[in-house]
Length: 476
Picture 1: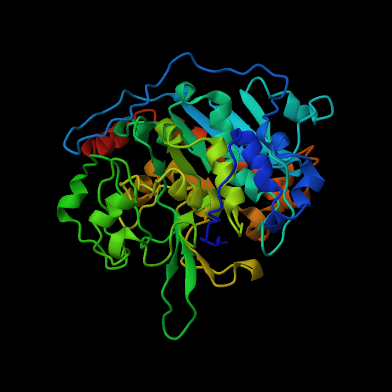
Picture 2: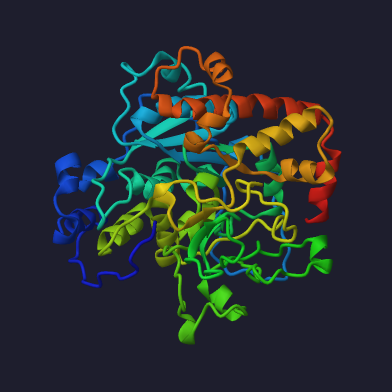
């Protein structure tokens, strides 16, 4: 779940970016596993699109590189679904989850990275019937061989580079915001669209309030690596204003976040009151990517301007220059910091409201769920808690705090391997009739469908969004 932060400083000969990547692949530290699976890096670098119609919008976004004065307030126009691009890494055996997610992502273009090219001629009928309707484009990034010295999971490289592959496919002028998450991540698109008018896509943003970070040992116990952890360093959005700030007392466990325009090491270092930085603004501990990273299952929001700071080739070259390679979440955070010089930004609303979290909220308290999660704690991953609140709201039994959370939730991580025993198996079977995939993924397929259905009912029941509009205008 972490990476070694030592970079190989040896210089590369003068050659193209693709040739440099191929040369780096041949290093002894990486062995021959990639070549055995995929031949050359060109197979990874070349994006293979399904033979489908790609629907790129005609509007463009001007990416500005000039610095911004912190006292200039700018409010971009209202966003719509055409401004969004959903990006998810997946695999052929998890294709049913990609199909099931169509219910909540209607009207939003989607890029899915698989380990091999999709053959629509042999793909399940229910999958290929919706390819064009749901504006899906597919890319390829081969699996990697798992080992202690290299990859934590076979798809971790795919999870690291998928946003950059998607940006290279669509181009930064063809989307304003990227929603990046796992194939068992649900984004509540209506809530995303209500958040965006208060953010500027021409500022480089990597946004989440669900971050991994160490929690010091207590009562003689071991140090835990916890998500979501409010102690993790972050910024607030550029020029963010919130009426709750006037009476807010920052808890001792929460990082004191400055405004970031954009958020980078220099921004945090100048405002450091937590002892995270030493002389020369060097990190004292837990550098980005080493048990300090965004949780992929909780999802992330990235502005189009973020990708003006580094290319796919830059990121791949950086990855292969490392002596140690590990999980996709940590590698992505490392690339964002080391290559793009960006640190996470908190969306702000939940920062000043300790009971609220926008990305994958949870109410189960700190949990350690399984053997592979040893020494880690999970404060999120409560999809059934969100479903309970949706059902309460539809029955008119949702408290103000419950309603506040529902109106601001951006994402939910299904992660159903720990929930199967809590689901009504007869109901699951009824809702996924004809399902032909792995039984391990069946609960996630069911919950994708259930979230889409319940959220649609909830949104229709809130035909007047006046309460939410008032809340959001207050923090504009």
